[in-house]
Amino acid sequence: MDNKNEFKPFIPADKIVPEFTVTSVVLGLILAVVFGAANAYLGLRVGMTVSASIPAAVISMGVIRVIMKKDSILENNMVQTIGSAGESLAAGAIFTLPAIFMWAAEGKTNEPGFFSIAIVALCGGILGVLFMIPLRTALIVEEHGTLPYPEGTACAEVLLAGEEGGEKSKVVFAGLGISAVYKFIADGLKLFPSEVNFDIYAKNYTCGVGLDVLPALAGVGYICGLKISSYMFAGGILSYLVLIPAISFFGGDALSSVTDTAGNAIPFNQLDPSSIWGSYNRYIGAGAVAAGGIISLIKTFPTMVRTFAKAIKGFGKHMDTNERTQVDISLRTVLIGVVIVAVVMWLVPAIPISPVGAVIVVIFGFFFATVSSRMVGIVGSSNNPVSGMAIATLIITTFVFKAAGMTGVQGMVGAITVGTVICIIAAIAGDTSQDLKCGYIVGATPKLQQIGEILGAVVAAFAIGGVMYLLNAAWGFGSEMIPAPQASLMKMVVEGVMGGTLPWTLIFMGVFIAIAVEVLGIPVLAFAIGLYLPIHLSAPIFVGGLIKWFMEEKRKYDNEEQKRHCVESGVLYSAGMIAGEGIVGIILAIVAVFNLNIDISGIYGDSFATVGNWVGIIAFVLLLATLFYFCRKKKAQ
Image 1: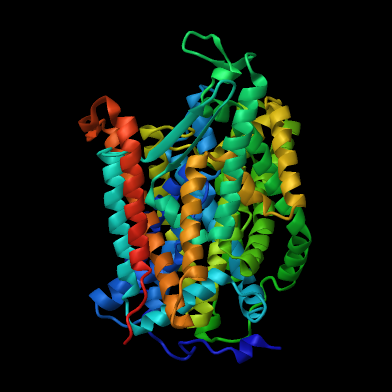
Image 2: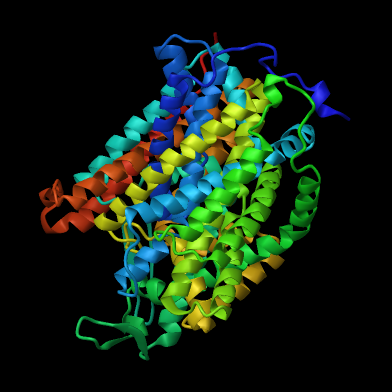
């Protein structure tokens, strides 16, 4: 079946409409910065990011169609293409680079400069786009009827629906505005604590429960759905209600590795839940996440091999046509670009990569770009095992560097830098695939999309460099506010391989928990992330998943169209909530850097923790009520 001849895009190849315009480029670049910053904040806080393609498309429709009164689906598509580059580049950068800041805080090395962060992110972003370009025909066109590319197809449907009007953008902006105000009141004015916590102390053990009453977490849960969020919450339950009391109980009066302010060891049964989590559960969770990433990689390895072989077979295959909808950036330009980036990584002093490291980046980068591009076509970008690819890369790279004599902090920083570039390549290649799929359906010009993707990556690289510097200056990576869970895990992996400093007993406990979960047929990565993260993060995500489940399964609708409208409105509102909290999170980081105090929590006096907890719960319930409101049934026309 020759799909490329049968399929007809929405805008025919022989029709020329506005696409790569000043409006679409400027708006796209703004959204690349906004969603890149928001996702950087979200990823550093909870260890996961969300797709920005659909929110960017919806906002574009609101601006271009409603405000500017223009009618151009290809301009909207260009906006989401450029805008989504910021989100995917952020995902790759925040999973790894904060590890170097953590080493700097420990006095082992110097903090990476702004230029270093930006140029590393830039190299990864450009390579991710370049590696995907020659694969477009093989993966997007030739397999149009085989690879669904869920986010790309969904985004195309939103754009096509947008031809009816830009009303959906109002829902996104409502979520953004309400979330921003809520976040400012909670974490800016501190009228109530954003973390509600209840520690439980018994005679021989301790445990604790709690949740962060924040809009982004509920939004993530709604977008992910009940299945994924419940697996995460199950991991949190095991961590906080099983492992913490078990460690406290069986440790008893024995002295732990945790010390008080005077340097005296504290008995296990006198430790608070957060101390047990930080000193013991965290390593168990790290072992589970590492094992989960490797298990996912092993399970998908046959698919990776077939994917790589099939994609290579079609590498550089260009259709013998001059049709607008089939024109890519030339293969010659791609190859020259790859060589230039490789040389830059080798020669620029700001990037601590040796010639061997540059070669590893190109080889592993192209392999994982190929794998990522095809895998997101099957399972979607949200399920793309980028962290598993990063772990595999870090293990191999660290061993190679160690064997080549690059040991200690120099080798570890080099390994993390290589891992960062690979991580960004995989994330950007997957995003580019989804965007090109969307463009293929609506009738966009691939070459212009590819240029737009590179522009988005360039701007986002410098923006994310600034955001990471800002967040680290405000709170410090690895802190309670910005735990940077994925980067902490990568740091542990590199340290463990290079220096053998990990508490391997705890690590292997997590490994075997992950294996047991896999044997039971439960998606191990989602469970492991819940085990690794504080329950305060997985609990509100689970609440958001419950709301999505209620909307999809329990609420009564007149027809399927009404159901689709309600569920989709919830997704758009949730995306707005995530963006709103992320933006205010960045603003509050600026406030913290300049030591501006806007805290008014003193109105409660000494009872803030007790009274504030209940105020926080009430505020969170009211916030969830707004989500229900925007999921209300559509009035009959």
